[in-house]
Length: 468
Image (cartoon, rainbow, N blue to C red):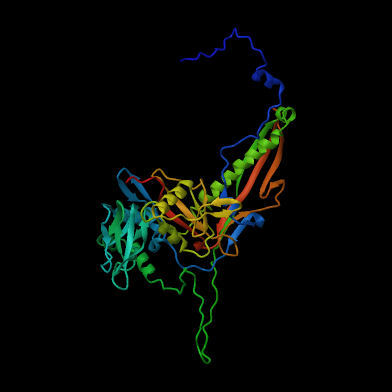
């Protein structure tokens, strides 16, 4: 049975006032202006902020003797790659070598090798016959234990290198076995090609000879100049004198800033301020946008951003692609008193999948009333400002925070003129001939890593779902 409903037509006579007409006489309940771009900004909330007088913060450290160990960059054209000559200065033996022509000649002698997974590039105990630069892929360093068992000693990935000891020691041998984990592209300089170049280029030969003769200066496990201490002695032996050497060129962090000019027409400010203050709402959203930029810069700024300022010795690579509990444990083991992890939401989801595969369900922790995922009791905070590459890889950061713990700190300066919020001011610029009111909104900030092991990174983390 079909029931026919009456159809409303233009000729239908309305018996009551329509809601659209009634709304003309009603006060509408309104929300404040909403903004999708506002994120949780956990990094900003969890960093201890240090007052910086004079706009500059100097990080004084003990003298460190280790240099080099940089990331090498390449020029890739299709399937062919070449090392950028100036990037060879990232190798410790060439760090202060300034002859660009010789570096160009050296770069041209590197040969490209494309390898399949499982290929042995170097074998423990054999002569170091080549210098290898990693263009793309991952390689595993494998050592031998006390009972000849194989042990994994680390991962080398794109931008890394190995075998550079051959530059200063012709008799060097491989200290570990190096085997490819994924498809890998290497640029390799054979020992023979290096020897031929050294015969014809005396300035390069002199540079490498000078670096080979640099005396080994005592240092601790962190590369700092050693402090001589005697212990366990008896009687009255002559004690060794010592002093604590400082870095003569400490790094200085100058406060960065984000700025915007807010413009509001006087007619809007005069006539449309009820029930909400138009200038106040415009200012609120502008400040939110500045704080989002601050969070982005704290992660990505090329000068002080955490991704760029993580020491290379504190960077490791995911073993299998996705972030596993083993990877997170390795990242934790590299520093004391890790306070937090920082990861893209996709990386947190990928880590959750890996835990579920192993039947692990870590308990979340309570942070300011929020239930936050955690590993080993350390919160994993979400940060959408950490980039995810086109290949669906990203980075997970681990850090110790605070000045007392020699950790990562935020830098700002409070008490600035026309301060609206800490280290943020709003300055009235005036009204122009078009009746536009202008306000200059400025936010000052930076971040500092007090000692290298305060910040670590798990790189090449795959966040895409893997097919079976």
